[in-house]
Image (tube, rainbow, N blue to C red):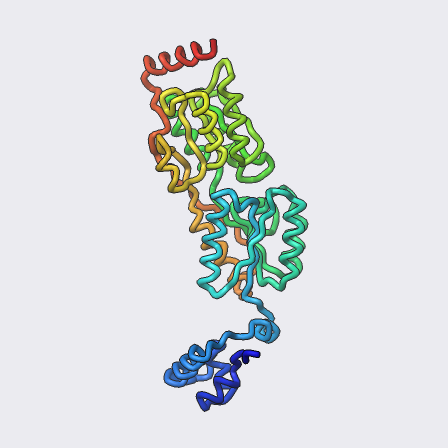
Length: 354
């Protein structure tokens, strides 16, 4: 059997005491005023002997596992996979391991994931909740495990969250469409009860109403490509179809693109398209899509920082952080302020429906 190197082996080889070796390898050199030369010799020997610390023993000693949990609605969704990637990277920078769960946008699966991951002696949890239930998350908080919601959250509960200002993002996007001459706009929404969706619908409607426009449509019920595809197909059958579609996520917009392509609808010549969310691949679609960009990296960095602060008991007050979004203008929205052009497109649309 192969012998696994321990601190006793390092102590014997270097000639230092087990206590000194332990303090160096546990990052306590400065506290105990251990010299740089001693630290370097012990660390070099540890590396030479392929020493790896006994995490189980360390956990028993410190009461911390250096592990956090992350639960997202779908790792297949590029938005959530990016969140997982950034959080994993940020946690690693602070010497934490991330256990990742996928709730498949199902509240029952989410509750089970929360229960299973909580049983693994995690130090904290970050979650993108998929439903409007939160008792199981409050239970995590009340058990003493720090928890942070990101993207989706609960406004009136004492659970910290970090997200985008979804209302402002949707309001800004809709204002831009109106400024380009669009008065009949359809938005395809996601999960109706999720707070980001509620805020986006409110921002969309307020922007339309503030411009005294009533010819708008709110449709859809899921942040999926299938939802975007089906709802776009239905919108194209309308006798007064919209001049612009606002997809509330990249996945919804991908479905809308597929439907428009099948119907040979030109973007933006015949219908303009705008999406909520950003991703580099949107610049490689023809035409590149105008979109509302969320600061995903900043959201994740703040969430990890807040969580670790909680774990280290430096901050116990619930934090509620909303970050500004950014409008990125590309080529998928047409300016209809030229009345002659607007009338020409309207006539063309009506002829197609005959």
